[in-house]
Amino acid sequence: MKRILSILTVIVLTTLLSTPRAMAGNDDRRGTAGAAELLINPWARSSGWGGINNANGRGIDAFFSNIAGLSFVEKTEFAYTNTMWLGGKSGMLSAASINAFGLAIRLGDAGVLGAYVMSMGFGDIDRTEVGSPEAGSNGTFSPTLMNLNVGFAYSFSTAIHGGANIKVISESTDNVTATGVAIDAGIQYLTGENDEFKFGISLKNIGPALSFSGTGMSFTTINDAGNPMTVEFRSAEMELPTCLNIGASYDFMFEKWNQRLTIAANFTSNAFLRDYYGLGFEYSLLDDRFMARAAYVYQAGLLQDADRATANAGLSAGASVNIPLKKDGGPSFSIDYAYRSAYNMKGSHSIGATIKF
Image (cartoon, rainbow, N blue to C red; front, side):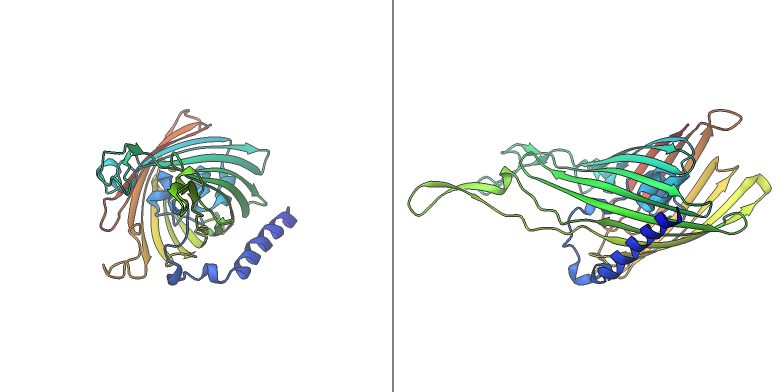
């Protein structure tokens, strides 16, 4: 088991050392990556954290924050979340919504296998053409962004947990598609008398570049000889939005009413965006029957309109209610809600449910 952990650690460190420019938060490369939906958190619980729960993410939510946290699934876990992105139908993006379904199953004493699919749609958008730019005269089209994830996490000991995730990326309309593959890897380390201190590191979205293809990349024209011919454009390749997360958290436990206060911090080094810095907390009551959380994610220039490089940073908040289905423990059902603020746009609302067997 220690050898597997060593191999995973070497892979992560080798990737970091071999791609120093990709981990520099290079402002000159901002906006040049593809598959930006990989940076959108589809899960309600970790969205309330602002995605900074890299060290203490647990269960299916950990697919986004740190795949190593998947190893804490006890038996079987199913989760679903719907997100109204940037206001949904009332936002700047028409009917922008995200649906995520996930399932995780424990295999033996230490391993957990999980999978989830995320689908992002924008509703019907008016199609316009050079010869007829009027909206409504050429029908509509419906873009879809989707990624399928399959991950495995393993507990090497009670203190060390690791995992890896393979994702298939698909972006499509009715006549143009792009498909790619990416890998995530992560490690979580727990220490302290009651495992109250946690440390996490994850590397996300490592994979080959994407490019578009399909009949929408071609058009028919007349050559100099007067003959019709079909011309096909070649799509430029788009690199994936690779990022490195380093985070830590600490649990303060209180015996009265079984309370817990968790403070978490995280640093995200983005290859094609400015780096993120996040700080947040979660308050738990009655052994996680009720949880409330909030976080603030900062990026350089965020508070100045002229220098701001993203709309999706700032304040996040959320809450969860966990309902045991049996008095003696075991199966449970939880409802999660999260709100993410957005500059110059309407905020995003996520609501989800999780069933644990």
